[in-house]
Length: 438
Image (tube, rainbow, N blue to C red; front, side, top):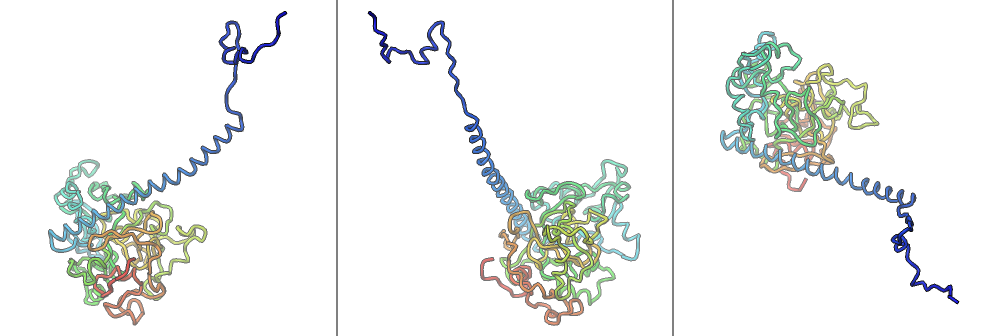
């Protein structure tokens, strides 16, 4: 009799059974639905953790690139000074005389061969010193328009008025002057998303004009170029209030920085306008910014729910012409395009006393970096200034003649800046030396 007992060792395994001829056994292997959902959830969490880190790494790289641009501009300033023994002029150029009462004088600047009206920014003279020699050759020589209805017209060296708008018929009649509408990589911060029109060659960097805006902004004063505004009173006001490393139409030198180059801000960065009513790129008009308490006069116009933007009902400077916004013309000497002031701290609002960009306005530096912006010191050092830097008493009037600001304590030229460490860094010779880190 045969036993039915079969040792376990003789029982074929499933894998063995699969190989037995004539036998097919399918073994199903895979994830359950719960396991799949858990894996998907884990991947989602990891991606969620990774994306901010990637964005932070990218912004760190953009910030470093921006800092390098500022450093290049610092080297350009020092090389220029080494070559010419002075700083490049802000609001300089050819045939600066502008007869405000004559439309002919105004138009002559716009049409070929044109003249720039003495309103070029210091950045123009720096171009050959930050690797833009080819562009400088176009600017410093006669320039012939090569296309369009103005083809064949020739602009004189140093070009036409840099504040022509693209919508003006003169651009069709005389032709575009390409150097003024060229975007220069060194003048662009990678963190700024602004690009293209209505900008005519955007710039994220400008020169520092100090802690007072009187007599410093645009073409209304021109105290040294022969206009009828050049009275002794105007010149006295200019000397009293233009306290930065740069003064309009004056050829300053390193020797004039009595506070020391390491204690004086030379340049700073700012964001360019994107047409979104950002308070840092579009200004409020018609606020008494010079009087006591005036530097904070535009705070009430900020949107309470979006503190980086103006409220919808705010009256914006030059609202009908979007070309007159922050940083949209690198070649223009108007401060809204190529200047900063050390009055309000970084990333605060733009506030104008008048309704036009040539007037008096507070223009702080700004950036899309977290918590502050870059500035260039006179000695070439690049510093990152936080939004919370000591800015003194913002209820005080800025330094100027008493007939302008109504503050007798600030009517004496050379008075200490009322705007703390920030204001002191903007003055070149007020004997305000910063001994601590900032």
